[in-house]
Image (cartoon, rainbow, N blue to C red; front, side, top):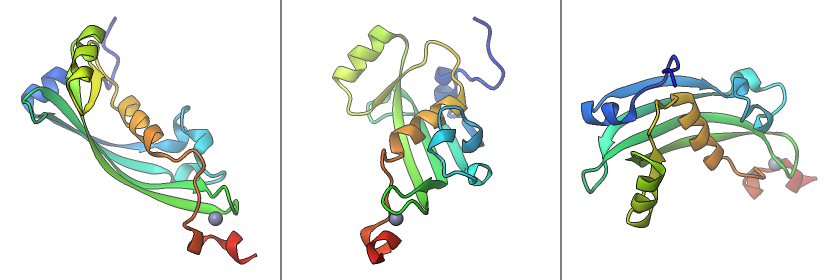
Length: 148
Ligand SMILES: [Zn+2]
């Protein structure tokens, strides 16, 4: 398999303590576009940073950071809701699926199989998909539906 443009070697990034940075255009992502409030697609930009590091046990890892506001639709009142996202996840790198199973068994952290060049956009999409609530809603006191 050839190296796709924009992909990176996760183990090398971890070893070199490298940093990759960029912005994800959420509305242009096939996996995320239908989660974004209609008409807000172009406003949905998430800043990301992927940093080569090690976990507490000294194993190669990536720290994935995402920051921004995601325009969603409140499922209670159906008006826009900007969900602030700000999180950092550390994922331990595995050389293979078998390696990942072993790491999973004795690690609290997320495990990422990096036996191929990784696409930063894909990692950021994964993080965002895990973060977005299935049925986003305003806080009860902020939701206009409450006053109807
Ligand atoms: Zn609401």
